[in-house]
Image (cartoon, rainbow, N blue to C red; front, side):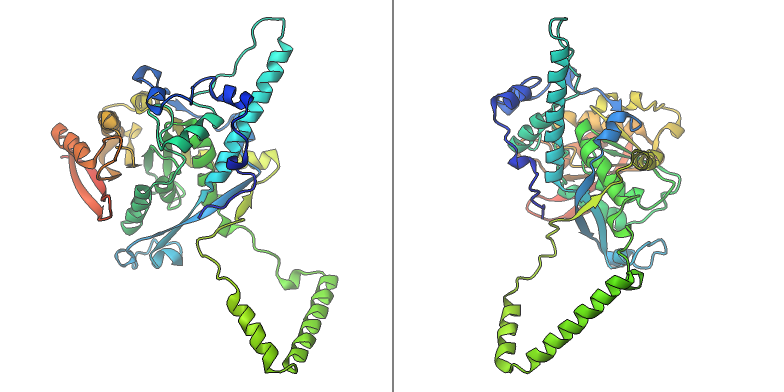
Length: 430
């Protein structure tokens, strides 16, 4: 359940004249969604995000409002594995943390407001001295993306649904938990990562694995993927220092606690003499207290360090094991320097979930996987059997793979829900 942040973007006034004009600078969101879709020559080019930059440092929030993703899996297949790191997994539940969507929306809207204020300042300084220089933004701004995301789960070439955590990503985490591997020293890629839970799960299994995260929108990588990486690695909420114990209290605090305990004990003794009638009233009051919903994570947040050097240390920790790559798949292989006959430039494992929704992109996704996976590696494609409204389906993607003939492809997972969900495993033929 998502916490309703009083600062959330839903509470911001997004429809005044100034903000409407800002939303329409790059994209006119008043047009039908079909008119907003980009052609191939307008797609965001592939690019490696620089986590050393000042923008990344300033983009780290002071605190992250987060939720737990508790993902059950069939623990019988893994219960005896010696590689288990914690008891919860032995009981068949993977616990990962993800940033609250309302917190993301708030930061996106706030950054757009700051950008608008900076643009006005620049224009004022340059008034009379020529045209004001505009800051180049790759893809839609924050307010634009919020408006688009509220209207549709995806808009081709503009917003590709990365703000949400989709069901098949959870399936993929569960499958990886059921089928543990040694990831030490391996290179892993998650394509179309969004909240990136499958890749992050792998990241938590080894200190020497390298996981690259790719998503179309750089805002998703900065405001969703990166915070989720931090939440599940160096700043895990369950690994934060515990509150001081009683024996660490000062003498004054101990005396105050003792006095409070004695007072409470005295009140309790007096209550025992008041008779059964008052006890029954208290029991009734207790029965009327609502039970806490285990899925209600309201108010759950983690403070990040305020000092600049500590923030840089967080980013360094992320850089040590991960890279963030934005943009269209068509430029990924060239950007990453992947060579056809050099497996050292390729990946041992490729993960992707909910990325086959548009059939016109099947060939592009498949070629990216084929050219990026090393011999002996594996690729997992988690998807629904059919995507209503956009036309993609897993059978068409599987036929494309089989027609090419380079891979053995098999279904390793299937969930018989209203819309069936599957995971395909791809391995090169010998």
